[in-house]
Image 1 (cartoon, rainbow, N blue to C red):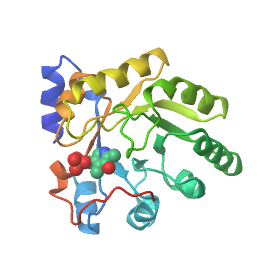
Image 2 (image 1 turned 180 degrees about the vertical axis):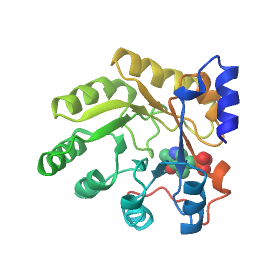
Image 3 (image 1 turned 90 degrees about the vertical axis):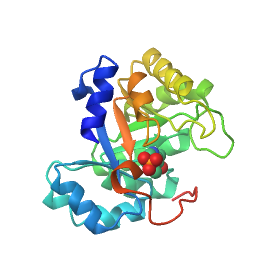
Image 4 (image 1 turned 60 degrees about the horizontal axis):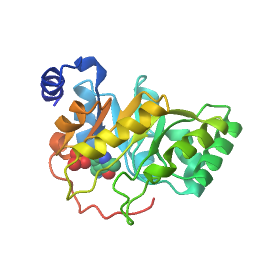
Length: 218
Ligand SMILES: *Cc1c(COP(=O)(O)O)cnc(C)c1O
C-alpha cells in the first residue's frame, strides 16, 4: 500500500512524503493490529471510542510513536474519553462537540487536535458540517482553543469523488488549513490527485471487514 501511494503521488507530481497512510483497524483482530505494527505502521484510524480503547489502551504505552485518529462520529458524552485516547479527532462537526472537547482539554491540560468533518454531499444521513457552515465552525473551534489542523470528508458513495475532494481543498485553503483527510480504499488515488495529506485505508490493507458496518454513533 505504501508503494501504491508513492506511485499515485508521483503520477500526481507530488512528494510521497506529503501523504500519510492512516491504517483503519475497526473490526480487526489483535493479530491484524500486531502485523501492521510489525511492518512499521504507526498511524491508525478507528471509528468508535470503545473499540479503540479495547484495541489500543494496552499497546499505547509500548509503542512510543503511535498516532491514533478518530474517524467515526463522536457523541458529546464520549468527548473526554476520546480526547484522552486519540491524538487527533477527525470528526468535529458541531459547536456543542467543540465545547465538550474544549472542556476536556481544559481538564487534562492537553491541547486537543481536530479536523472538521465536512458533509460535502449534504447527505442527510451522514455526519459532518454542511459546506456553507464549515468556515464558521472552524472559527468557533479555534475560538474555543482547539488546534484545528484541517478537514475530513467522506464523499457520497454513488458520485464521482473528485469534485468533493476539490471542494474540501477549497474550504481548507480559504481557512488556512494544511491537513486534508480524504480518500479510502476505493478512491485514494483520486484523493491524492486533489491534495490529500492523509488517506484512510481499511479493506485494501486488511481485506474485507469481519462484520457488516452499520452507520452508528459511538
Ligand atoms: C471504514 C472507514 C474507512 C476505511 O474504508 P475502506 O474502504 O475499508 O478503506 C475510511 N474512513 C472512514 C471514515 C471509515 O469509516
